[in-house]
Image (cartoon, rainbow, N blue to C red; front, side):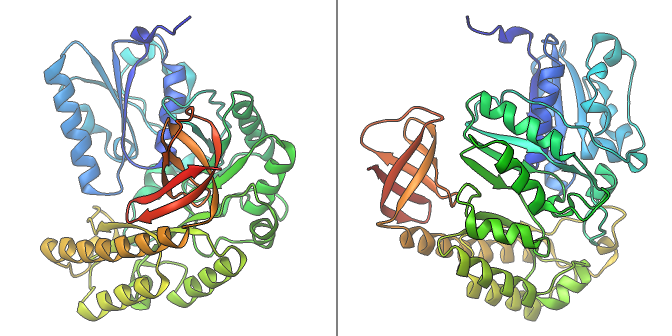
Length: 419
């Protein structure tokens, strides 16, 4: 019997994988509230906030009978601004949105619910059984951040770092595997800090090891964005010996100039990243590496930008995620001498062009190799390295894992044939 979707709320999600995960949680709790639209906002950039505001206005113009509930980091930081938008009946804080009791008609009618996120000390495991339209699943392992990068407001939208227990993560992963998900992605705000709030000497590698042991039918375990200095000995050992831990990492690098990294108040320098990458590639030569980079950070002159450009060229990261710097009110970086918006965009474009060339070379390096593709549509999916793959020949089923050989590669990904 097909599900009745008329009573399911519409959810618009902006921002990170953790937001996507939390949207699935809210979707389960709000089932039955068909006249509700949830807008899950992001505060990383001004552009993300602008897009969310535009979406709210469009929703209200299209159907002013819909009840709009706004949540997420931007809503947590400035609830009054969002509650003043047309059609918004409630603003829910980041902690409040994950409480089932807040997803009733009575709770929505009661007005804004925005708890003090900085006072939250624990995070509970949320069990999600279905990820709409996706063949890979996400598991939240951690919330919040204790670091204070000068450009970032997220710690104030997410609160202090707090970890989900090993048992809670295992239960989530096991439930998803029972639902026939073959790949699970561990996600959070700062997953490298997992376990730091627990007694004992626990780290992210211990969590990964426990999940892989307790859920033997899990075919793929993947990590979301991780700090370059967040690698413990157990994690290194798993990367070396455990084929179910995917050869793909998303590193929060942000810049390739030591002076800019210091002004960002990052905890690594370029030498740390270089040593990390060399070690990773010595362990898994075909590893796919994604990195976040900010272009046009305050005080970034031509020399500092060139340092970043040359560093990224040297490292040849195949997947560059480049963002022009965006001022965030109340952050130290917003008080630093700014680079013009035009220059930020120009530099971001140059870095993206560099990233395209690195992607092309990486995908071409996979030609002739055998890969396993998790199919997302009948002819499209992703490899272990997170290379986007197009399947030639006989179609597959979404969610199927197929063995294939790479026959060509270009800037966009790889083309594969079944073997």
